[in-house]
Length: 576
Image (tube, rainbow, N blue to C red; front, side):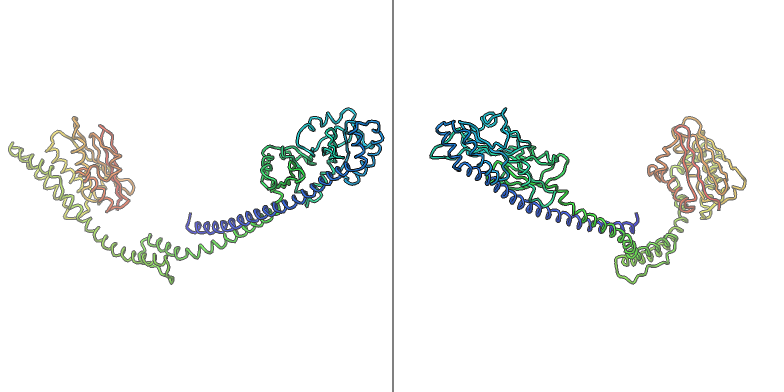
């Protein structure tokens, strides 16, 4: 990816990051503030609803005790104390007015039931359940100790044949005429629907649901909607058991977070009023802020795309200029120079680039002169470093042949050695002809045949007569033949064969030296310029370097070798 693209992406990333962080932080801050305010507002609303419910329940208790303080009820209690059952129907008739007045005073009251040892009293307008009496409904409950009033949540009344569920209040009578009545109880039933209306009358919207629950997890007033079944789950009830008032967040089975406030009633602390609101519904107005942030982000991204291109172009203008100058330098134009009116980092690099070009031009001239001298002395160095072992063997062979009287062989060897040096020197010139190069390597092989008799034979094959007159770099074949003799036939028992082939292919001259020696490690030879740093490595490395210096990439040297089969070396050079 280009630097311009990276600058553009970085610019866009920073813009998106800043907007995202700002939007997310704003959203979270607003959501937290709304949530806190909603909890405080709901807690105030809940406390008000608790006060209203307490007031109604307290009024029911007061009305019930007022009923017990009436003269008619007092007269009934005297008959109960005296076990007088003769006035039962008279008392029942007298109590009808008190029952009617009780309903008028507290409209929430549905039915009232008073049980005594001399009989049960109730409003004749209500229909008692003859199959179910007080003892079967409350007989076990009234035996509990330490209570004066007892509240019961939503249930079907077993004392009356009324439709719908009721909430019940069970009371012990007050002391009358300094006498306590142990077997007299009063049951006041309240309509559940009327009690539910008290819960919902002060709600601001339908997003908030109020419930009246018992601390044991049961429902005092059943909700009209069944979408809140989790309010009776143990995990939910354990939350509001921790205190008389507070708030918490609860996640239901659908994974929805619910904001919950709770407060216990003062008239009955076992009853807790609970307010529930979906967090998603509460934060739904913030969806507009979320979409607004997204739209702003998209707009800023589009704006950043346009501005980033201009910004990147402005920042990279001097750098692109410097890059174009470098491209021109790649095409060997060393006269270009960087100029800028700014004194910034790129200009500093450009000035150093100018100084580098000045130094390169100086060094280039020095290298050019040095390379010319190197090419001129390369062959001389190679000639000067003729293997002493070769000279020693040659002179030693000449000596013994002279002692043995083989004067003809000695004469031939002297002529060959003289011709070898003369052809190698080539009047100090680096370039020779193919014909002269062949004569040079042939003299070398003849001397080696005299030194190592019956070690090898050779033959020279020239494909076209025109090849003889072509100019090539001198001393190319002799190092290859030397390697074949000294290393290829070193461990061979059979007669060695060296074949030198010269041929032309289009505009290329092919020089090939093949032998049937023991072979060599071609992979290692191709991977390194030298094999082991010895004579063999130096000769081949020297040969490869001379080819590169004179012909550049147009020349090549390739090795093919198989163990115990032989080695073939092919030199390819362009025909000038």
